Amino acid sequence: MTGSGSSTDYNGYQLVAVAITFLTLTYISITLRFFVRLKITKAFAADDWLMLVAQIIFTLSCSFILRGVHSGIGRHNADLNLSNQIEGLKWQAFATLSYIANMLFIKLSIALFLLRIAVQRRYVWILRISMVIIAIWSVVIWFYDLFQCIPVQAQWDFTIKGAKCVSGPSFIAAAYSISVMTILSDWLYALLPIPMIWSVQMSIQTKVTVAFILSLGIFASVATLIRLKYIVELGNNSDGLYTGTTAMVWTLVEPGVAITAACLVTIRPLLRTLKMRGFESTPAGQHTTLTLRNDITGGHWSTISSHGKDGQGQSHKRNLSVSALERLNGSGSQITSEGSAGEGEAEEYEMDESGITKTVHVNVVHGRASSFLKTGP
Image 1 (tube, helix red, strand yellow):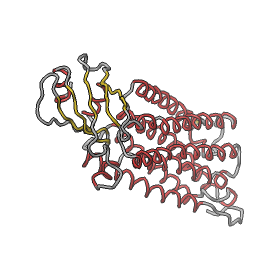
Image 2 (cartoon, rainbow, N blue to C red; image 1 turned 45 degrees about the horizontal axis):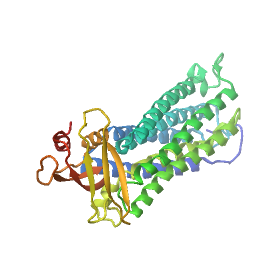
Image 3 (cartoon, one colour; image 1 turned 90 degrees about the vertical axis):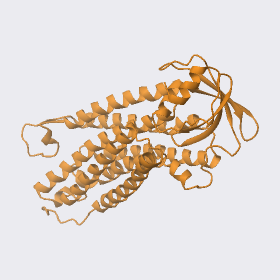
Image 4 (cartoon, one colour; image 1 turned 60 degrees about the vertical axis):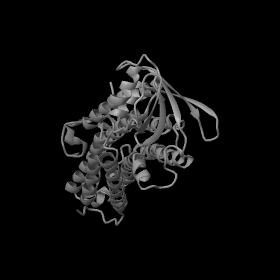
């Protein structure tokens, strides 16, 4: 491994510590998430599959970096022989490619999770449009990064003659591009749920806990900025294996925090099962009366007006949609009827909105609406 230099500088231990720490955190978090979805809510859906893919890619990223540390990442190029320099740069390049793919699957998983609880049309369309933009943007940047040199191996094997690579400014521009998308989506997915869940009947403790976990997405955007700073400083640096270590650290911190936060926000049903104080969905004795419109048609948006009282006795009104109820039916929601009722009579249902449970008294206005709640469209 040793080259012509004799420096003892080494900072690869930072990468080893970060990789082990976040591998541990993410595997614990995703295990809890899967336990909740498979055993408690029985609602393993597309967002869980995407998060599983993200965890696999994150594991690969950590493996690439750990392998790179073994080859020479964290040491000055001058302290390494030619073979180790090439190997170190190769694993560094693989880690960057896996980072872009990782963030794509994490973002899509978070967006799909939010779609499971989104009940207003504007939120649904914001999430759908953001998913399309993120997917296109990430795929373009991934292929740009992959083919920044022709042949591809020239990214790390600087001994290849006649290779053509993009200029330093073009590479920096691509780094800015993926960072802008990541930061904007981090803030969107961290802040959008606040108005979505704040009207849901949950204790203040629960709301604060959920908001805190979601705020970790904002921290992830800070990680993006820090990572970008060090990547820009690299530029045409000829000692990238040593000076690039800090950028690689944040390449692991960002997805590690994102996966952990996205998984922890789904474990509320487990906390409720463990009877942890403050995680009940609806205060005892509090009910909401829903009046179903008689124009409910499958696949169309129809309003369900909800009137009730909050803990302070103030009136409130919420609007739900048929599409939201369909998602609930398809994601392990519980809709149980107590007794039977004819048109205009009352029935009681319990619905579990991705871990947000509430008991409602339903005033059946139309027989077809009653049938919808009992059996689904």
